[in-house]
Length: 437
Image (cartoon, rainbow, N blue to C red; front, side, top):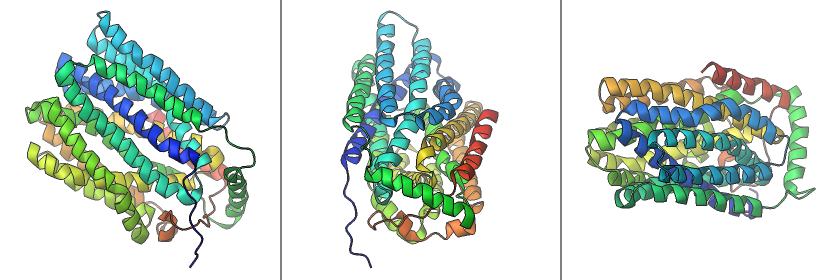
């Protein structure tokens, strides 16, 4: 057994985790406040879904292009640029409201503009992670990053819900703008990628290993791994819509209770990295993702029974969903070639958001025609079917990967990724699927 100590967190990792929290805090506040404006103005689930569609269309259309752009230019610079544009755009929303703009129109337009910026930030930030974080720390980083994502999103919902009750939505929009500027400062503070750094050497070694893998082994199933990760997009987009309607309309509660429920989810998310480490050590990354999604789907059904049942179950939903996301993201990031990570995650984002848009539209029509609980049942069934079919479609040799690949504590002898050309071929499947959606 090796006694070599694992690498410690570098400067990039120490800055990327809080930047992730701050960015998701702002995004969550924006989504909560905008959804509230639209729902109170039009009082239908479909109206909230149209807001989600306004958020997703630019990302579906532009993520692949921006992903390719990320692989050609400096990733840190693009991430900083995205944050600055978002900050400027976000502050325009409350100013427009102050000038007497119609709330629904303001929400749709502002969300649309911010979505364009987000289409650049997602592949840029993920490619920056692949570029700056050592392979041996990817699982550990993704665990911490997922906690930051969920904590930021859910803290925003908790904060947003009560602030709406106390002061209205304007203060939330100003705060959202400030979060983007703080995130930009953190991204800038990471610094330029040092020439000849360990990350650069690792990337060079990975390219050499990829050439060997092309001749000696099968390519990694990028499209299927991306689909496994994209299930999370479907859950987030649809879940944000039906949760709001369930709490306000079915349970006849105010947005303050929505904040409590989301905070409980966040408490569960804090335990996800530890749970992921224990489970993935025995089952590997892909099986861990499947287990997380399946258990989460069962918990989701119980959440729709009663407000107090939701409060009791939601921490466990936080654990299981975040475990699935950490495992799926780590598996995809490990398999993606470093110099093509932007394209892979851009295509994944486009496909996931297109699928999420289709799911939320269909489930919204079901909810408006019946009741919101049926939306929970439909989402649960969808996740079970897609996750199970995706994992069953993976090669057996890939499922049998050693559990050590998920352990960040061991110094990595990294499994070689497949050749770049082969990886691109599978990634293109996502682009075509997103275009059809």
